[in-house]
Amino acid sequence: MLFGTCNCSSSASSISRRSLLCGGGVGFVTALIGTLASSSRTTRAQGLASTPPEVDSLAVRIVTDNQIIKFIPTEKRDGLTIERKPGGYLSKDAPPNVELIAEWGLSLHAESRLGAQVRNILIDFGYQAQTLLNNMSVLNIDPASLDALVLSHGHYDHFGGLVGFLSANKGKLKNGLPFFVGGEDCFCMRETDAGQYGALDRKAIMDANLSLMMAEGPAVVADHAFTTGKIAQTGFEKPLVPSREKVGIVNGFGCFPDKISAAKNTGSFVPDDFEHEIGTNFVVKGKGLVVITSCSHRGVVNTIKQAQAASGIQKVHAVIGGFHIVPPLTDEYIRQVIAAFKEMNPDYLIPGHCAGERFYDLVRAEMPDKVIHAAVGARFVFGA
Image (cartoon, rainbow, N blue to C red; front, side, top):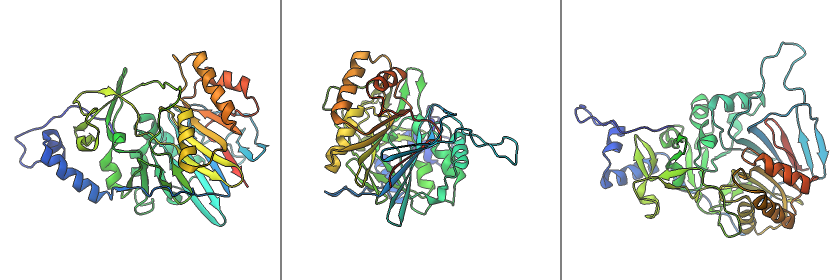
């Protein structure tokens, strides 16, 4: 998952895949693309039709997030049930054993229903595999039931748990399970001011017998959901740029240069524009859009607008996920976002992960009946 410097040896009796990657060369990279595309069944995701899929109900469970909130009971609101375990996962017949874990990362499980048809999607994988696996076990989420996997973008706090998850569930996942990403950029190497930030492991995806689905445009996910495709930055939002990306292959990790724009293919780290980031969305019958933003690096308002444009549906029932409104973004900027939310008039806002405490304080004051804090283990049930 992480990458380091090349350590190629010309004295080796056989040439390894990693040493070839270090050696590079246009001809080899082109051949490798073909090999990987074939063996991992890389394909263009099915585009969204003019009419998006619609479901009778949707339950979104927070599997991994930054905090656990106890002592708040289950409650019902208009068109929404919020299921919680206020006392944790204690048993009357046994001493304390298992409990949920919070970490800096995000993973969500979406279960949708249309008549007798049920679909299960896992969106993002948190920072550490042990956290993801523990929480899925505590929450009784069966990996074998999953119909699709979605990775919102190439940041480690969203894909860090993936390789361990795939390893622990080898042979349990559905054959050819689709794995959606927003484009080749998702695989690029990244760094922050604190240091390297890893790169998505393409080989692990390939070895797990997943079907890699490239979804640069709006795409249908497991018949019930759809992705935003590339999110246009057209409004007032000026999102923070916390990471840099580098095009190329190093020690087997990275993105293929001929799949990335020339402007980014400089041989050096460049500001990350998150062009590959995608949101995951559902249309709940009689309620409207439920937009799962994941992180909103392209702007939370822009993400919602992209879901509206892709689906043709304007009514927003709920927005769930990270809003990426954190310092040094100012109160003035936050109030602009809140004003945009008021104009959209969603029924519910469920900020978590990178939403930011100052944003939460201000939006809760302005829209008290609409804002609900996300927390690990909480399950939000929309519709029937």
